[in-house]
Image 1 (cartoon, rainbow, N blue to C red):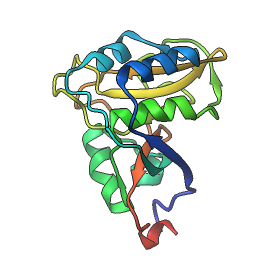
Image 2: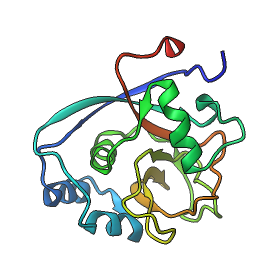
Image 3: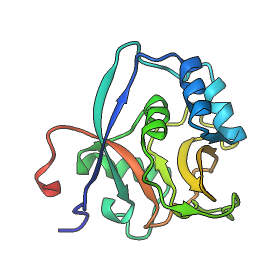
Length: 178
């Protein structure tokens, strides 16, 4: 069956931490931020959970979502539910970055209009609809340094079939994922 995952599950613990403390933890772990990430962190609609929570997420390629030619954010979010997946919150992205250190190393900050090699884009709904405001976060390791980076794209931008995304898993798993 098309789209059956080679599941890369990760547990994400989140909530119960202030934004100031999260930013302090990012700094303590020497996680670099780009200007877009800082823009997202300052947005008034960035919400944080008061209570600690735990969820299971999966890292999947777009090809595993049945998007063999890649897809736009709209197509990606439309494909995910049929595989038992849903979007993450930006808060989950922050905690994921703090806890996930298994990234392959890549080089150079420039990505020439495509998702960078060895990056994981967090599948989160954009805070604003405008093309020039960051859509969300992705994580990557560049020349040995960990990054939490924000990104922009328009509605027509096509992510590649091999680009990796982090989604929240809904329980129970659909049969097609087992």
